Image 1 (spheres, rainbow, N blue to C red):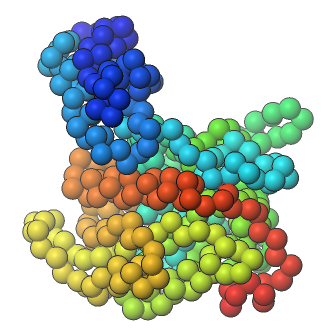
Image 2 (image 1 turned 30 degrees about the vertical axis):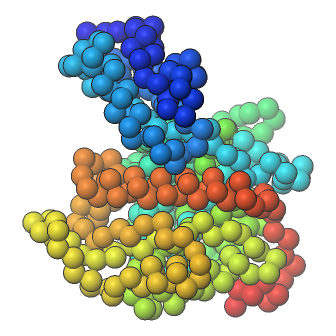
Amino acid sequence: MAFSKEQILEALKQVNFPEKQQDIVTLNMVENIEISDEKITFSLVFPQFNNPFKKTMKKACKEAIHSHLSTDIEVDVLATSKVSVGRIDAKPEDKKVLPGVKNIIAIASGKGGVGKSTMAVNLAIGLAKTGARVGLIDADVYGPSMPKMFGVEGERPVIKRFGDKDFIEPIEKYGVKMLSIGFFVKPEDALIWRGAMATSALNQLISEGFWGELDYMLIDLPPGTGDIHLTMVQAVPVTGAVIVSTPQDVAVADAIKGISMFRANKIEVPILGLIENMAWFTPEELPLSKYYIFGKNGVKDLAFRYDLPLLGQIPLVQSIREGSDDGKPAILSQSIIAEEFEKLTENLIQHIEERNSKLAPTKIVEITNTTGCGTH
């Protein structure tokens, strides 16, 4: 059974937005209606993403369509907002690179093996699920993992001519545009590059990618604090950084170095929050049990100590690892873990909006030498 856009809008006129006391159709809150025989999908656009009526409104929309059209059709409501911009006052020369990108988010970790790339992938897909336009750069040039985690290892980007210049067309999956050095090398090859080669590769992914208009660009950085990180902040105005760590003392100690780098004089990139990954182990057969294998609340305590938001605590569960290996990230599943990643995404969006409403746009960093940056 297929319904027209007009029928769907007529049904949704029965849903009022409490803050305005008008229906959501009159308020132009309904966008991007897609119709198939078995499913109706549309975006519900709120004034701000963390609106207190979001869940109530999504439920009311589904009930209105089921009541006025059919109880047999699946209804998928994507709650989103008009994405705020952190670069409004960027200098003209800053806008030459990624001019159509509203928010650039660095995903970093002080230590390897803490699940940083897993967080980046699930956050990127989570943002796309809200209806946002999302890009992802795999800047971990020594250990690129995005092609495998998205299940696109065999694909190769093509060159697209735009004006008088050639651009690299990103690979797109799950609503995310992505580029990675992993698309240009064999998976079994070791990348033995000097620093200048690695930074040049990152600059190519940033400046020569055909990114178009994006609400969010996530940059998955290598572990540590080095050339790639400095190249990024010198190439683009970074809206904010997210730091990922396990609660283990060794990992937390390295996370502190990441905090210090982004807060350093001359860099001064706002930190949007911390993510505690592998916060506890939960066996699949005992979903309510928690075993603190890597210590308890290490990142939560760190966030309190440095007055930073804790965006979320993600447990160590087998399905996250399986999803990454199989090219089907955990946020795509129908599970409690998917709900945790969705909450994590919502928290990130909230803190991006807060950052953009309270702080001036970040500028491209000008660094003449690294010793004066406080990164060592």
